[in-house]
Image (cartoon, rainbow, N blue to C red; front, side, top):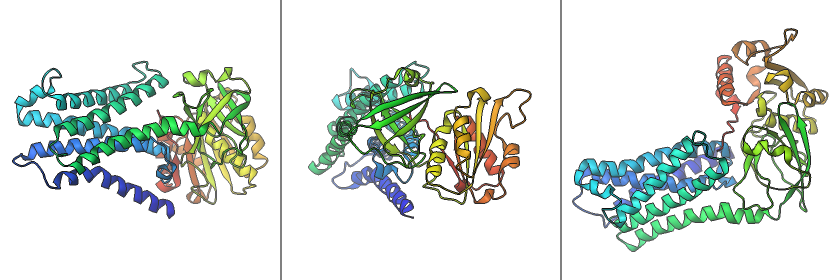
Length: 438
């Protein structure tokens, strides 16, 4: 109930903040003799600008803001609504030109005035953000370089937009209105300073070091960390943290990984890292004693958040990592609740946590079903994909009373989600970890 109230509060506050500029426009003194389309375009510009300003709050990783939803949901919303905000801002000059074609001169960076030039700079920065975000892989833009440009372009866009509003002056024609917009720009840039300077500075007192690196099947490594001169970190099973494998916490080279260890062990934590991207391919070269910094815990994908009489865990590939945190935590807690684990993988040789799961079966009421996509002819278990037919065969009799946790490749999660609904499982019982935060 507390999470629901908190979630409703933040949504209501968000709507108030986004719509506030329209209300501000109506407070006298206001320009007179302007047509509907001009006022409508200005309203779109203000709403879009405020939406962009709010994005700085969303990416600042404030736990009180993200807790009701999970930061993964917040960042997915950030990607979607940022495109809506850019569309609203683009509509602002387009409507003005359609309404009066002579205003096309304002879109000429060598013509117009300084207000229009600042607006064009903001739009150009926003378009660059959209293109590099949507087509980062096609442009072969590395994650770290993309993050740096995303940051620079974002600050450029918001500052240039605020300059445009101030120089245009039509709706900042009083001291207090002008102060509101200047204060907003200062606050947004301040949030960037908090995330990239102040927060890393605090992390220096909570350094970690690599205690062990274990190679596992499926091109995966277990990274084991121990705290240096502090008590460790308290997290819920299934959560994740951003890792910085660097001598300084001020680096932009950070990546999110799920905890794979028990939440009952805060002084020795583990992450499962599959060799997939540039960063994860370098993990095999990490030496014991290497310095690590963490930003976390984050995320709402946790059995502690959705209690039930029993669970069904459905994992594929590296999506098994949070499932391992669930199982290790339940074992350490002597949790008697039954668990069905559906473990999908490309082949039997690629099953990363097979041996660990077998050990946990002796400590838990755990039934494990391996589902290799490809299996030898003498394999007498399940094979192929986790679909409605497999679920119908394997789900327990008390399926309607269990909570379901699904994590894996996006296509797999979509298919499993639909298959669960076909089996009559309620939407509220199914939790998905869509772990795409870049």
